[in-house]
Length: 219
Image 1: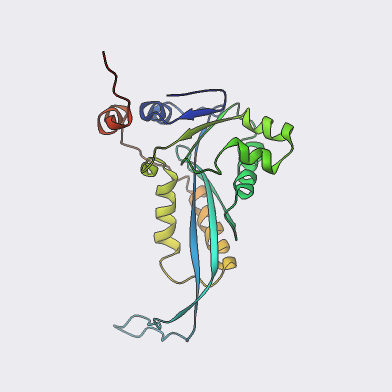
Image 2: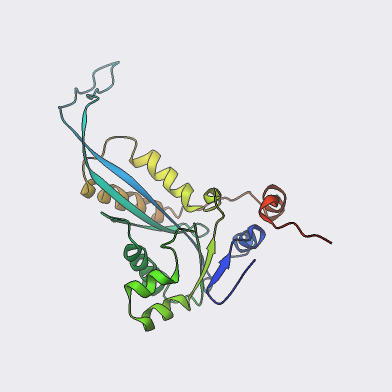
C-alpha cells in the first residue's frame, strides 16, 4: 500500500478498519460514486389502470437527455448528498468535493474519501477548477482511498444508488428537473430517517476473499 499526505491506494483491511472503528466527527469516512439517468418522454398518452389491470404505456419513447448524478455519503451516520448535473466533468466533481469539505464537513480535520479510480478523481481536477491555494487547502483535508478495478462494489455509495434506482427510477423520467426533484425528495427523507449501512463484510473476510489483490512475496 502506498500512502502520502492525501492519497492511499486501496488496501482492503485498511478500508475495513476505518469502517469498523467508532465514528469520529473529526475524521469521517465518506463514500463517493457517480451514475447517469436517461431521461425518457412518453410519445403517446398512457392508458390508466382499471380494476384487475395495471396502467399501460406504449413501448415507443423519446430520449430527452441524460442526468448525471454525483453522490457523497457517510454511510455510518446515515447522511448523503446527491448533485444532479447535465454533464460529467472533472470540474463538476471538484465542485462537489469543495462543498463536501467546506460545508458538509467543515469542522472535520481529515475526510477519508472512498471512490473508484476514475481519471477525474484526483487532486489534479481540484487544481483545474480552483486557484492553487484553494486546491491545496482542500487536499490537506482529504485522504483518497481508491477501490480496485472491478471492485467498485466495495464502495458503499453503490448501495445508495441501488436503493435510489429501485425507489425512484423504476419508471420513465421525462426530464432533468423531474430527476432533480425526485432525488432531492428521496435524499431529504433518507437523511431524516438517518438510514445507515450494516456492513457485515469484515476485515478478516477481506483478507481471505481479496487475497488476490496483494502482491506475492518471495523468500
